[in-house]
Image (cartoon, rainbow, N blue to C red; front, side):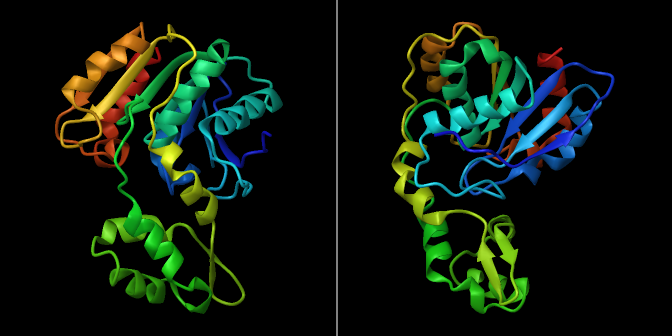
Length: 257
């Protein structure tokens, strides 16, 4: 059953074009804040917290079909019949399922650094960190960071994970629903099953320093996406929008115009 997603609107009163942006695993709507601000010069931009993330409801289900149904209901509630869509990583897989189920609701879509294929598990340390720490006992974010540092050396990853903390009267709580996300993790990293070929104009952006999309994947993608383009940002890793925001902005605005 679809749930009401939390979202943020970056309005453009002069444009009738709407652009939805979907974050990746353990992310939230403000991950794309800077780019959403810039993109609102051309579109009304809506960034969402996907279910079990950010301020959106916690549910016991997290299939890509259910997540796509959430977006469909959000569009209906906002009275938006068609829109442009951008999804990064898990959000990219979700938007691939969304266009499979609701092609009439998609003008064009951009998938950022993810393919529809299955991936090997790669987030075990994140799950372990979230499950092994009692965040309610930490008085400050620095305390939480020091504890996380024993499990994760990369400060950038720690800062990303710490964005999932809510300040409570006593310590902190997690914004994400770790239990459901872990239960559905095999589907999160699994291959997307399509009901038909996708003819909506589609662009895959991928990083030259990322291992999420390789050259062999492009051929496989073309068998499903019949109206597809590819854009490689050579010096970018998986977090393309954070590492190369100017290039990402230019590519998105160019493809959607």
